[in-house]
Length: 413
Image (tube, rainbow, N blue to C red; front, side, top):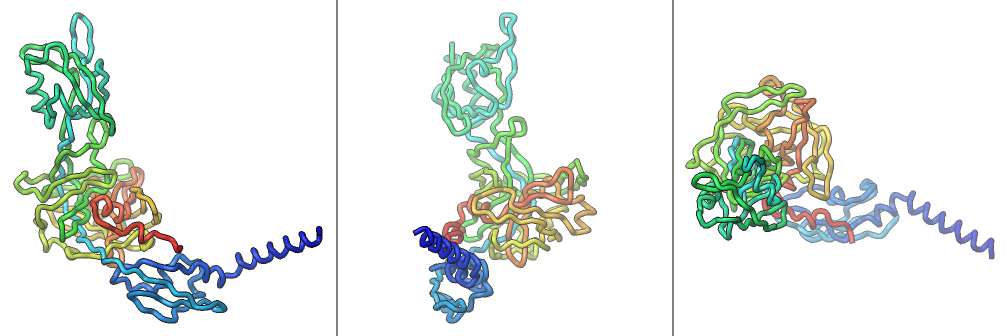
């Protein structure tokens, strides 16, 4: 009995070892029942499969629209179904843009002390408000802008207290606040703001329905560092007048001016960790502004390679130019993350004028092998020539553009 059990154990181990070491068997077992490909994808079908040893596989029959028959030496042929999905193309940006956001409610950005009866206090802080909270309502009235708050504080019917509704992160709270009476109005003892603005770079837009993405990172309030929750916003043309050159330890900056509201390009509806998103009212961008102003295929994370690439951005006026960069590292991702690539500026002209990556370049699209693959997000403080970039697919998803993520990442069944 003991010898029988030992022999069985030896055979199991031998079989397990054979399976592990036999590349042909592993390749055969890894051939999926179905794969998903874009309509214009001309890549060898075997290359699209998550298989350890692709050199063991031979394509016997290939019906590009429906299926492919594959053969591994020593094993029967196996058929894989092909699901074709529509091509995904967007127009790369690179344009310098200005962004103006109005928050949902008014944000508490600080407190000030009021002297009363020889004591200093803040009514807002006493009522439980914190920096970063957004006041949504006062006495049942919607607070859309600063003027709404000022007007309500002039209300003589306030008397002893205000009924407040406010958002803290994503949770709605209520409190009673006793304002301090001062001359012809009342005061909260809080500094508030409901707008933010800045400049950056347009990453892409989708010409059929006008969806766009820009910046590559969130717009946060300058004091609280909290993300601005958008009630409404606009993007507009921006012109780069001069460059503050960056050096290690001190990132540079584009010195840009914004056009008037009448020249707005579109509306902002979302502000996330991947940038700002919304709709262009129409294609008001200069169509002859760069050689890349045409629909371009999207390159997904698994397609990105280390090596040369191009970055589109503006360093003078409104002229979009392409500059040489190198993708030093790429991290294929199954889940959204803003740091998907490490890039390094190689273009001598750009290094001379800017020192590398500077503020205002965030959102600059990255092109590799004729595909838009990502956007600049951050500069390394201690190395002005290098920085992070995000994979383009996460910005497309944030914009509401279907990238067929589940189909592209599904495993063999």
